[in-house]
Image 1: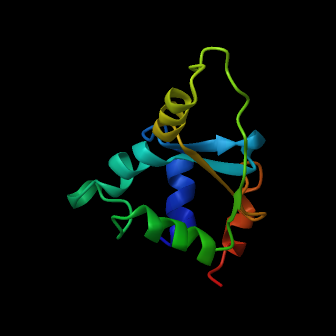
Image 2: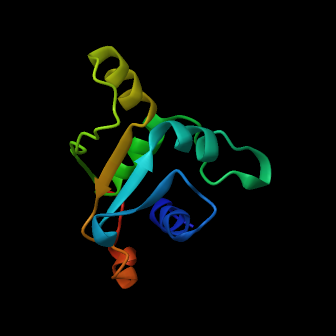
Length: 117
């Protein structure tokens, strides 16, 4: 399978906690640290991609036309009031959002249009 098909299977699977559909099925959300451990850190027959670094995965997303979406999550009242603690909490839960018009939960038939640039 090519990268987009593997990514689709991962997003649709209940096995992965580090990647899911966001924005009503129009974006892919990746919890970076967990993704590194859960997907990129796997070896042997459980290995999904032929890469071990997040940078390589992001490069593949870019090659296939995914665009990073900047999102500022709403500030929770439960977050620490001190900037250093808030920064530490944010670093531990960094979520990346990527969009591709041909990669949508509601339109699996468009997946074939995800081609490498």
